[in-house]
Length: 136
Image (cartoon, rainbow, N blue to C red):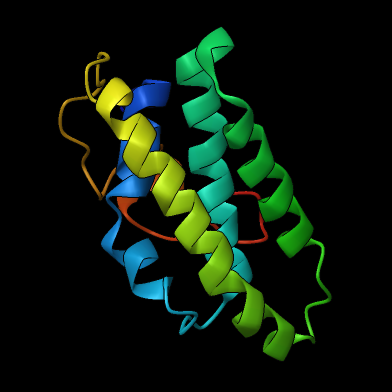
């Protein structure tokens, strides 16, 4: 057929795209339709940030990954607990990304511009939150 090949992206671009995501930023206070989707989006960013930094990844990056995984382990029906813990986790994640964005922004960012309509890219690369369906 005439389908273009799937788009590729660098881990540095993925990390910066998550960090700069308006949809994710809007969730920071804990006022999202699905806070687990927001945390899944953070996990996509954390994994790509670690991949971009490789052996230079600091221990506190592993800590926010562990904290994010713990949040994702909360029962779905415990939305009150999620609303209580999410803002703290998001703030910690954002703080780590803020510090490391200085390093990441110096790395190659492929593609330079992401087309939000490119469905071959993970949702987080298109400015959307990741879902439980494994789309990130």
